[in-house]
Image (cartoon, rainbow, N blue to C red):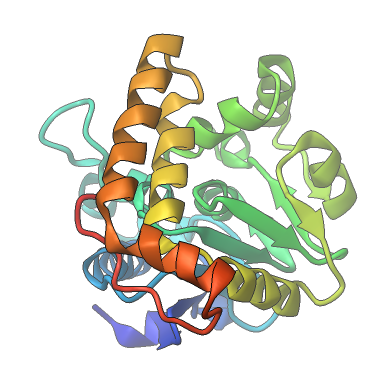
Length: 268
């Protein structure tokens, strides 16, 4: 992985991931796709990471696909779109849905441009905090393309179908306020990164196993049948009751609030 394309640090259970291609407004070339994919895998392997803050360098989140870079490399599209089975996620899709599939909460900090592929990546986060000047757009139609980075997995959960289709058809650029009203962002803050950090600090005070179970249960049950939801809730609760972090959570509430949680269980 080209480390320069992603700034990655981890401190006290919080991973800070920054898209770092500021000369191109953090636009996505093949190398950037691969770097994001690799850092998602790195976080999954690290059981000490309990929250992720995802951001972009120098005042912008991501301006979307680097169209010029892709046009200059005929094999780039093949690298992004190749998959062994149609239902699998390819490289282009993993940089969005990969965040949803991590067993830890992911908070995206959105500043400046968040266009096209940038919006698709942001939709993979669980929570999106935007600055007032941020602009968002599902922009693929502008280039004669369909949104194909799995962002629609989240989009169909957060807004009505007609509004999602309107935004996708028109490639309209939205202000942060408009995006908030539509549910594309969770909240707006003048100090979005500080807000995300405070939220991450609040989250890591709770059990990492419980957070993993909550995320999995909500994501997999949101559009599932009631029977599937009930079964998943029960199975998750049994696992939590048998885990050491559930006991630690109880101790933290009653006797020792400074007691540290154990590493996240691998079954999530």
